[in-house]
Image (cartoon, rainbow, N blue to C red):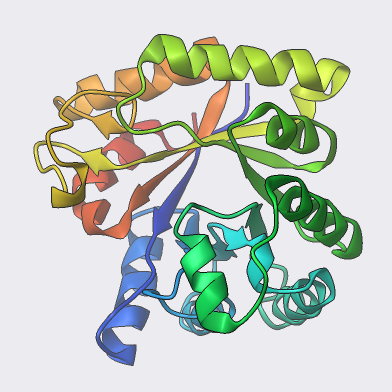
Length: 256
């Protein structure tokens, strides 16, 4: 049984003071990682992660997740090597084949988006070039899950917030079949879209699903315990807007 890890996902702030404050607050509240998305609406993830690392001491920083079409594998390996050194080993690399919106980001940067197969091949090439850094791979479809099963350290199960517990379990079962003997080596992760009573506007009418952690602190902690005990999901991330709401859950589960 893996110990829990908790991540805060943040991608933007109006100024440097606010951004460094998010990093410090995440560390103070017991979060293990600060994770930066990779979209044109957020900060450049490598630069943002570097700044966050300079104002913290134990907090790890990472990408969640780099869109493979936007950089060459060699460029990612270079940036990763730099951050691995300058953070004292506190950098973790999160990779993915790209969200639907990533096609627009690729167009803005003047780079080809590629087919799903080409994008996934670029992820595999990137993993092969990176050294001595934990690799998280966001995966949903069979091809991405197969790659994650063979090459990743952490697999972020990319299920929609409204997915049911049964659908989440089915995704874990699929990964289990693909990973075989390597399944026990994998850290399983998932991201929460909302914590507590507040629901982000972008979720629209969605009020139920595995991506919405509801109830009292005890009930929320019990939900995460069940998911770890039954499915092996031990790494849980939340949007940084829910730092305060999620902190009591961390306090309840940390070290267990």
